[in-house]
Amino acid sequence: MPGTERSLTMRFLAEPKDVNFGGKVHGGAAMKWIDLAAYGCAAAWSGKYCITAYVGGMRFVQPVLVGNMVEVEAKVIYTGRTSMHLGIEVRAGDPTSSEKHLTTHCVAIMVAVDDKGKPVPVPEWVPVTENDIFMRDSAIRLMRMREKITEEMSAHLS
Image (cartoon, rainbow, N blue to C red; front, side):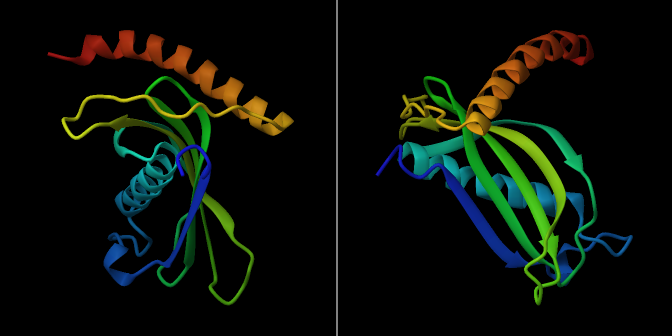
């Protein structure tokens, strides 16, 4: 039911095919996992097909090793009329231990669309806890910052 599933956690093992030349999991693999989790979370929240509009603030904190159990958590932190802002954390560690360390984090914005690709409304998410309110307020501050960054980035477009 749309508007009820706010978060999604995907779990899987990091595979040898994900390794870069340095012997660690490639950053692009982590980016793919983030996009998959963002889609799953946004689609569950909205009850619609969703597209990625933005991924930003990506920080690679620690490497993921082949054989690590990887957990990618996506959580709705703000909703606009047709968009959902998601806080995403990637954690990894030895599969025989419950201890996982933060490896990557970012914010993703997903937009719900109809079968013609036109944006459609999403259920509103209302923060309840102090942390929820903090995350929502952070998402709003980030929106304002992105507007300024967009202006600056236009100088780099030909």
